[in-house]
Image 1 (tube, rainbow, N blue to C red):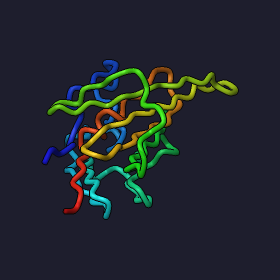
Image 2 (cartoon, rainbow, N blue to C red; image 1 turned 135 degrees about the horizontal axis):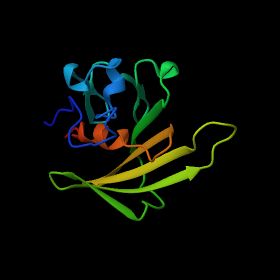
Image 3 (cartoon, rainbow, N blue to C red; image 1 turned 120 degrees about the vertical axis):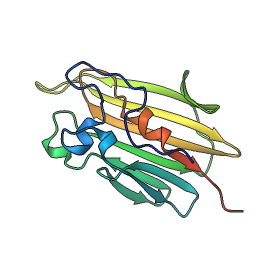
Length: 159
């Protein structure tokens, strides 16, 4: 089972080489050991123990440990869908090991003096099921945390 413990291959600017470094209050996310979260529906999520992970009826919600003190807080939700999505987006993102996420990114202009808001919506087809990933973030550029968090997700349906 793959484990998300750090930053993988994601790149950011030189001042913050890892977009997930904020998970640990400034130290590298690789320093925090991973923690496994198992949902009754078969979703298994491994993320740094410094992440806040909540359970929903169909999946998980992931946030940084103190989102109110971050310049660019974010929220990622992962849901096992009961039915196929109406649309999956037209872009592809390869996660490795044959995993493909279809996605779309929506950019809404900022209200007031803040940066624009982004919604990243991605879908993964696993067997006869679909998994929805959704990230919301106010930032100058397109959010990237969803891709790293998705690396730590597996779906193992009960037999």
